[in-house]
Length: 67
Image (cartoon, rainbow, N blue to C red; front, side, top):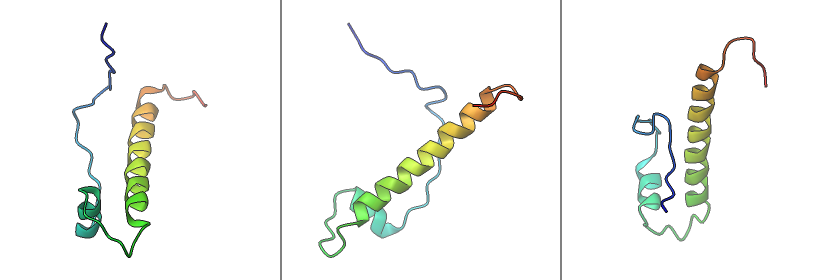
């Protein structure tokens, strides 16, 4: 039995603007004087993903439908 997740348009690219410091932190570099860096970058990524998913949901819904 295989569990597969289907992500509509899952191969499309999304652009997220990160600083070099943020990118280094995500790749595993340790910034001992900035403990909040990684959580803030992850929040930035989640926010961008949420916006992307909401845009796609809005594109699929017929006008006049409100949730």
